[in-house]
Length: 163
Image (cartoon, rainbow, N blue to C red; front, top):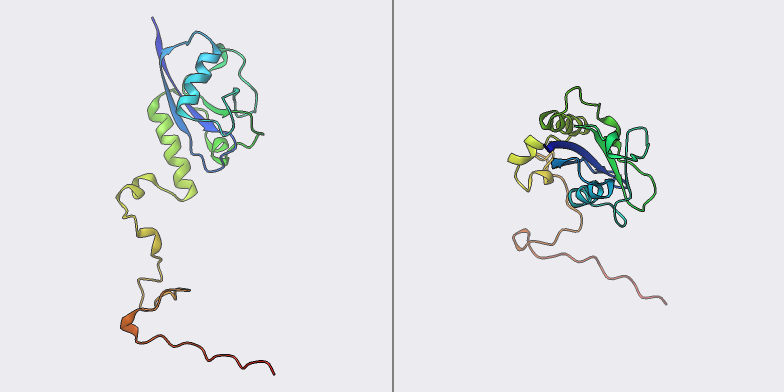
């Protein structure tokens, strides 16, 4: 009877990638190539089709027997090795489950300073405000257009002609 499996994939060459969860409904797939095709649908490589899955030790997986349930892998295409920093921040799960993978992703994002739960309720303009903007002083804007309410636009004096 086919089992299900969940693994966490990171895109090689994308430094800001926080991981994608691959849910495999029928484990094991017929071949390693079929697993790579499923992984490619969830987490597209930077260059070309997926060439391989790699462990934390940057060891390429050669067979389906090496894939661990709940494991964390790097998906590589034809680009050079450049794993995202968050790939190395994840610990191996004690018990493979989707809940552990989601906890691990949230933990890494919190360590990076981005909490996905806080961002869901934030307004799209919240990033334009800083802690200083709530005080009485306003942050000066460079090259902002003149507003009619501020009066006529004052142009700088014309420079003297060369003689």
